[in-house]
Image (tube, rainbow, N blue to C red; front, side):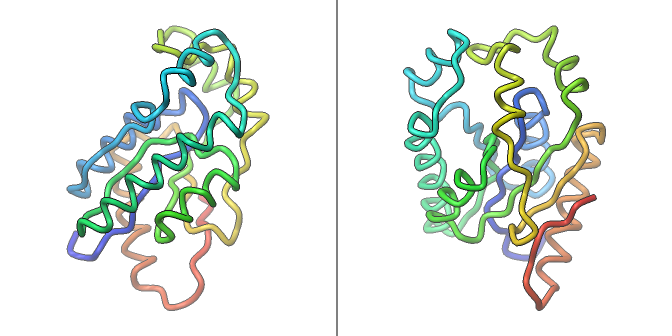
Length: 182
């Protein structure tokens, strides 16, 4: 793509495919991919591994680290695609406080579909028992948030193409940019 790309966060509950889709989007757009899980503290990973959901206080330094990485990339003249659950509006607002241009790609799927996906996987620190707390915490993108909702049933390649189209459309728009709910 020839246009200047904004930072992107691929968001959603555990097991929705954030890392897989984020890597595909980054590759498709020629951007760096960063897995937000790599920025969690050891204490956060240990807490989740023991089956306890993180609190907002636990998440704050992690989300700040993600926002700072994105701001640093912008300062370097580049952008990145980051996989990060970004479940609450306040979490997304915190990331945007570092990098206001950030757009969120929300991977949407039913609880049953996501539960089926994670039933057979072995994640380093995110047990399937935390899925319900993730869905309870999830606040979908607001109409005033720049972002795109895509179904998890689409392939990573299909999602990457949709993200590219969304970015091209957003770059060409002259009005207020909000969510695109598809």
